[in-house]
Amino acid sequence: MTESFTAAQGSDAAQVTPATGRAAELETSLSALLQRIDAACVAAGRDPGEVRLLPVTKFFPASDIEILYHLGRREFGESREQEAASKVAQLGHLSQIRWEFIGRLQRNKAKAVARWADTVYSVDSDRLASALDAGARAALDDGIRTTPLRVLLQVSLDADPERGGVRDAALLALADQVAASESLQLAGLMAIPPLDVEPDAAFEQLARIHASLTTVHPAAIELSAGMSGDLESAIRHGSTCVRVGTALMGARPITSA
Ligand SMILES: *Cc1c(COP(=O)(O)O)cnc(C)c1O
Image (cartoon, rainbow, N blue to C red; front, side, top):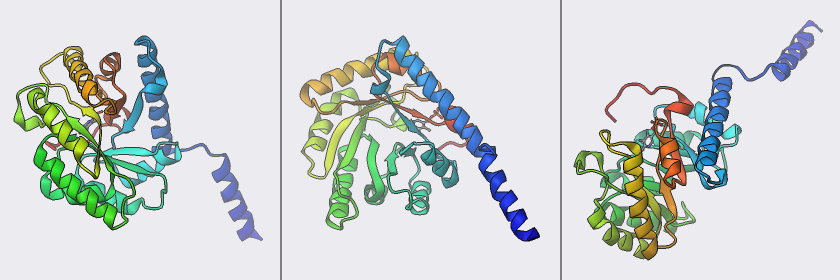
């Protein structure tokens, strides 16, 4: 009797106790972040339904992603191939999860990423686009994926090749190539503003580039801009997808990646 009494008490306690520890922390920061995004939309005169939150979970464990999934999130942004692949394997039981690859991608990793990513945000060269197309075609043939790989082109807003991104002058040719690729779907643009430029100026420039792209490729409606520090500015300038790590997950370990 003592044993079952203890067990019953234990399960009652579990039912009445609110989420604690990391779950409570993420629930609080997620609701604050969603309010912040809504407020930014209202301030910009936009419908909050037009701006999607992509939680960026790089450096954080699969258990955090599982918590966010149970809080209703379905898409997660990762930027390092090996780390992402390990989380994909660990979280295969979350049937509606979608993975989005937002980091710089080496061509020799394209085939692996094309097996599990719904979307790649960082396509900036014809060679990377070809490698992803081949990878996505193989994954479609194998039945590993059922839809084309969605692609956002990463636009360079400065001349620094280290930061990645295609220059404005080469953008249309790359967009044409992706749009013509059988296993890719051109979804839109992404950019990270240069550190030494006002976000408003950078996002305004990006919005102009996006407007000219959609005159040629009207389906490329996604404009992924805005992170923890500058999402209000990005939303003012037409962002459809903010990629937020720190403001949701907390600080990442210091790293150059
Ligand atoms: C890490 C990362 C983010 C998130 O940045 P925060 O400032 O932590 O919100 C967004 N986009 C890309 C491409 C990233 O690599």
